[in-house]
Image (cartoon, rainbow, N blue to C red; front, top):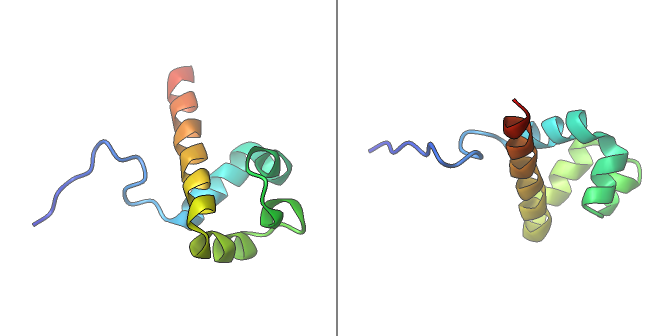
Length: 78
């Protein structure tokens, strides 16, 4: 049984994809200001951020929320 999740912008998107798009859009410095966690502010890297986000549900929720917000802003601009 396959259900589509048309209203879920996170469906089919990996955490790594989300993080790469956020870094491309905001950059590490702005991302660290938006979500204050050490892996974004001190020697940031995709690998260390993914490790932290996979183990920390509240931080992952904030990253996913910021990603959805970014998508909404981009959609309104077009």
